Image 1: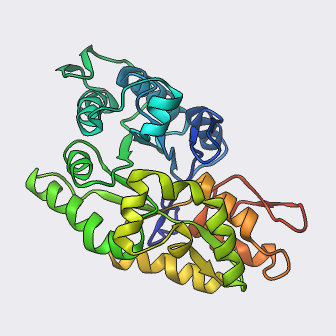
Image 2: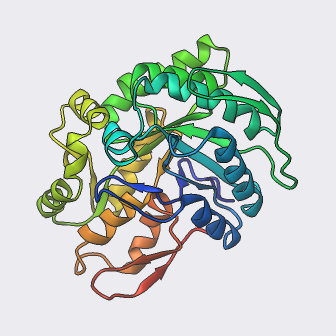
Length: 315
């Protein structure tokens, strides 16, 4: 995620395999990451996030190792159990005991991610096998962990967490202390904490907030995100969105490092927030380059107003 210049916060690129807000599935994240990796040389490419229920950890490891080889060792797998709405209503699978599900999943995926054989028998998943992926170094794993037990499992079995709808107060007072304490207890390295928040560069704060409330309305009804918003004292994602001038946005993203956030995630959702909430008359595409260095690593970002594609500042 960090470029050659060594920015204090790094950028996680990637598009979600699942789009809950529109209740439909989109592109395959690994394929998109492999393409992005073939066109870049410095940035880390990651997914945010791949649902676990739709594939056995063996196949998740195969996909990730293949993508890692295509990215030249710059790929990180972001995954999570998704939501009951998706797993039960859309896929017809059980969402019972998601923490147990993730523990079983990571107990198999972890060794495979390091090109190690695995022998594990769990209640949800079992495996007795090894993979051979020449040219693919180990890949990192981050989990969309929000609740305390999910954060504990992540600290013990993965490399960090990727949050969404989690504001700076909650990150500082709950998320980061919880996952760090669990890692210390398990004698594990300090985990990565990748924070994703809506972003809008604008001088019309109220208009941006109004748009954000509409664009991200679905997240208020998903229990795991609702719990994080309630902890923050936020009515919705619009209350924790990073909005303001280009300089103000860069400053607020930089402040996340001060509370222990290790990375800032520029996901598809964040990119869409820029595209749909960016007033075309206030900030030029050239000035957006500085912000996009922190916010998104998308290959092409459309500047609404001119209709032109602005080259990514990150390669």
